[in-house]
Image (cartoon, rainbow, N blue to C red; front, side, top):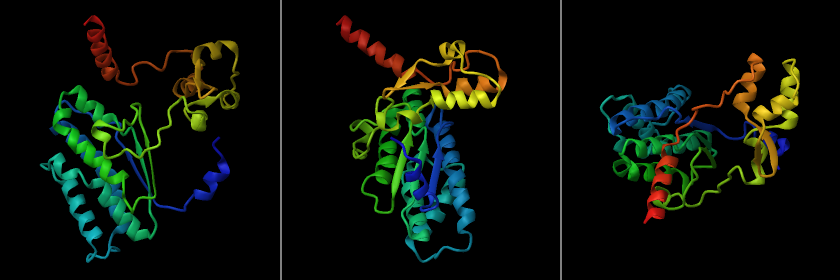
Length: 256
């Protein structure tokens, strides 16, 4: 199970690089590139301020970091030139601090799903393969990486370069309690807001079994605690395009 003591020993022990790709959507490679550049630029800008006047310009990593930062600032740059954004930032951070950083990427699969939905994955697939693969596998400057998303990391297709990942789904007991709010946590939360975890609330927001642990929907429970209204909050919060496409292909196979 997940132990707080383990976390405590890791706090402030390594630098952290964090990206969220939740807004990386587009109907063309140009639109998707704009959103991806913006997401990458946020973290690059944070480190640009940290490194101001402190990098050794004779080092390759410092030169690459500055070049990539300038590329991200440009309006006309193609996604092709962004393949090494992760690896370049990881290396300069590792050499600056003298310790391999931790890489956190939230909704890593959003730009990939968007490329599928827009019909441009054939064009951008190799980019995503290099973008993630080079950073995650065989990278001596990376300490650890944690990616979250709704799509499983497949060890084939675009992730053939990134086939050393450990995948923890909602069915895995190791981190099951981290995918939602446990009953004990739900009770404590509602008590703090002056409510109780009665049968009505349980029927409304319960119903998940992750790795043998009963959990509640965090988004719905937090909204209920804030408003006191038993509404349906978890509606249309994610795209099901890939699921619909998979079902269509399954139907065709069954009919044939």
